[in-house]
Image (cartoon, rainbow, N blue to C red):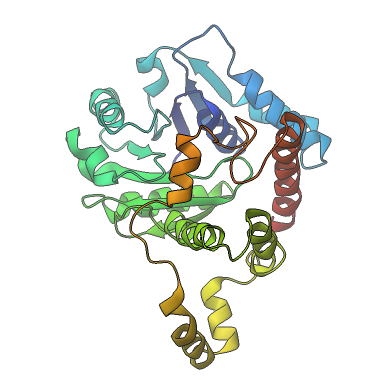
Length: 309
């Protein structure tokens, strides 16, 4: 299947970012469906493009071409007309996503792919109210989607391999780094890995082994530094599975194995210490420090993703 027209449903942070991603492809036209026409969604996209231009990751001409491929409307039927791929970016509430797909299914062609951008929810459950469940697929983009290359393409229990492959191939064509998750499991692939690390990181702080800043530095300037070029399992092969087995025998029995969220994390939330938004989480942050960290992250991602192309 050739994908040439994409509809993005939802004009929030992820919806705007995905619209920008799809519109980078010269063969794709994108319709962004916004519930409200009071604010122009293109303003947010334009701000993202300006940052790319300022960091020499894009030219003004390229940005203009991206914007020329985008239209937006508050009319659902107009947004969905003749689309090959629909990607929803509505709130992470199961019933909202289920009802969305149920309601739009009669408005699209029988072969239109319906993709959900959920980060953790079951694709199978999201598809449960549709008639053609074989065309519903997960496409978990990471924030900010126009900078993070990874997209997890997730197969629900009834998703056809044709739909899975067509979605994967299209994402690869437009410059993303898609991976296939062949089972509809909680957290898919990358979030499972991320939360396994988080669980141990939180335990290290709770047990008084090191403070939060030390945990972050240990990851950023140690193993995390090589992960973009050396995958975890590739590293096992590099050092030898025999050595890895010996290390695991010595370490695994002592790692965190709790099946519930971190007690310290629960307490922080209960105390209203929710991070950048309140100025304190595991560490304290001034508004200026929080803004600087957000800006620095995007500038770093722009730099490293330029090198990936």
